Picture 1 (cartoon, rainbow, N blue to C red):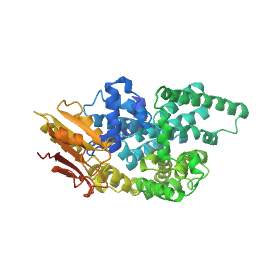
Picture 2 (picture 1 turned 90 degrees about the vertical axis):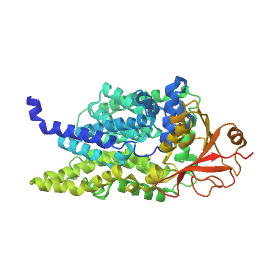
Picture 3 (picture 1 turned 180 degrees about the vertical axis):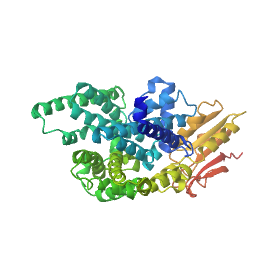
Picture 4 (picture 1 turned 60 degrees about the vertical axis):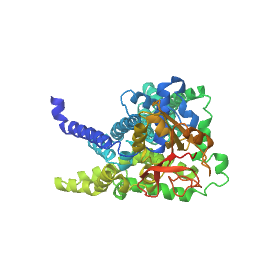
Length: 507
């Protein structure tokens, strides 16, 4: 009881933060339509769940498998496969939240600051978006924070058990996404925290190198598991889609740097908001000598990957920089805590918090209640709700097809063989014996002959949802196809639709 009474504020604040986290992440979690990448990952998880021979199925597209493996666990508890995938991100996001608390504590040894940093993570719009989507990026952020936490612990404690745990964390990171290797490459930054005043500097340095070597060895050992798959080589091919290989980069080393920097900086400012960005830089002005090395480490943990992606990035999205921004939240919390502790009046403390976090809360409310108009990165709005990659109409069309297939067999052709179509239909309709789903690509001026043949024996439908050269608008069929429009589901951008057509066969 004495312990509880002594730490009543801290315990209450932590419980409130945990409750707020799960409330904001679970609230309206299924309101966003299924996104193209979510459909891919969820379908992979379904296949791997039903056939253990396909546990490495993600490697067929050059993606590491750990996120799919986590989905396999969730599929045991949630009937809706998409909800299972999104709950993976909810729990990995909670892992990030816990990591932020502990990382702040180990760096600055201030529980109130740790609580404040955790609160900022809960209301961080970047996290609110990605902690409730069935994408890899929430898991990457979790491994990033925990890799930094155990790296700090290793350089300060120089213990074998810490090195082993760090190895497991790094192993999990590289089994999640190729960006996990960045946490290995950033390891030399930890020398910033090396205590030069202690004796036996050389011995301690080589001990740290040896222990870090054990951690890195474990990470590569876990990664080598992927070599058991014949699809392992596709990872490198997939990476070259998003990042320039060195032999390509040297031909135009800085051609795309200005545009990449401009876009990525805009995403950081948009998601973090200007008041929080001001707090980040203020952390180096406020008490500049105090905790300077710790603050420098946090900023460099952001800056290193950020500049690397800006220099080598070929095809980039805001979600790629999500994990990079987490250390900046801790820096902003440091500045905010300084301001709060410098005033005595309670109302002034709340006023300061409101001034710097009010915009974050406003963005959060828009994300939860009106995602279409939320002030977040335009490219994310385009992908998740406005453009053709968003699965608006999928649930409605699934219900339509289930109704049509109650007493008869039907055929569904889809525009596309990989992605939102046909995977979203395979997720929800794949076990229905009366429904056959087949994807087609490319789409030509004339309807495929096999579709016409099928339409002569049973009801046949064709679903469009993305642009094509022969189509009048995204989601429309080519004018020459013998089709009858059955239903049309407009996306947030009214120029994009998901359209169901019935195949008309003329005798």
